[in-house]
Image (cartoon, rainbow, N blue to C red; front, side, top):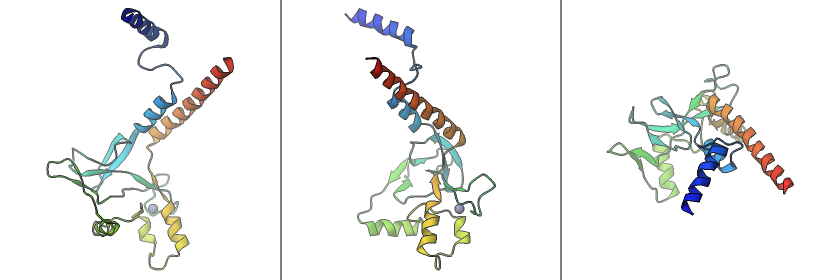
Length: 187
Ligand SMILES: [Zn+2]
């Protein structure tokens, strides 16, 4: 029985190719690749690091600093924009710190006020905020509508190669759906 099973597995490998090369892959496999595509992370001193984009916040071993997911400012008039290249920045979170042993440390806040105080002390905004746009904003006088507009400009930055790969994965996802639909029709 076991032998037969092994034989079938081996045959299966020959027929469909080992290592999950068959296409279209399952939606789960496609989504798993999506999660782990390269993302850009930036430290407080400006070191840029590429890592799987589901890495969250982590300690960059080279600099010993926290590495944060990069945000891009999509404001066409952002002073930090260089042609097509948007200004990139980070949004730090006072819950994370580098522990004495160099690993990622997290701290808990008992109340929302405690968190806000810690964020204010660390100079962290309540939402991702472009530091370059702050140079052309007047927070004292801007209207809520203007403030709202600026709050919508920051987006999580996606590396060009990752964006390209996402398009391919979208196409593969579509292929998979068509493949399943064709199988249902054939039944
Ligand atoms: Zn900006």
